[in-house]
Amino acid sequence: MLNNDVYETKEKSGGNAQGIYIYIGDGSVVTNNRVGNQAFGTGNSFGIYIEDSSNLIVKSNIISRMEWGILFEGSTGLYGDNLVSGCTTPFTAVRLQDQPITAIDCRLRIFIYKWDW
Image (cartoon, rainbow, N blue to C red; front, side):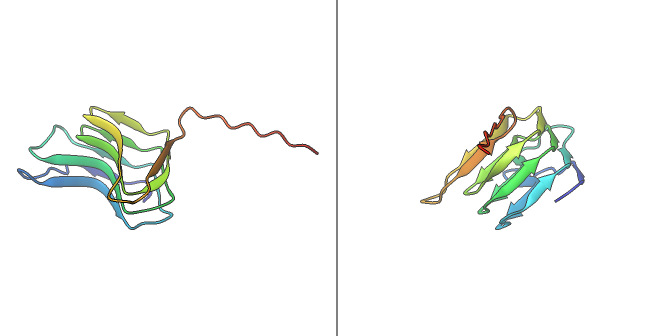
């Protein structure tokens, strides 16, 4: 999912709206997207919603005025360099039943490798 503009995805009363929704998208890359609303609706809104997927990369996205910025639900992956503004919950990860969940924030990580030649 690359380079998309998704705006004004309003949910109806009691409903949900997703700007970007990935379901069973193992190995997907979500990058350089812009998702936002002028204001909150009456239900739940999600900027990037990832469900039942593994080994995803979510990088360099801009999300504004959604109740949930980035949601990993029953999923694993990496995220970093995302800008989230005006969201009630910028990032969250939810574990379902016995599914593993790993979402690693790579924003401020520096990896140093020492090579012995």
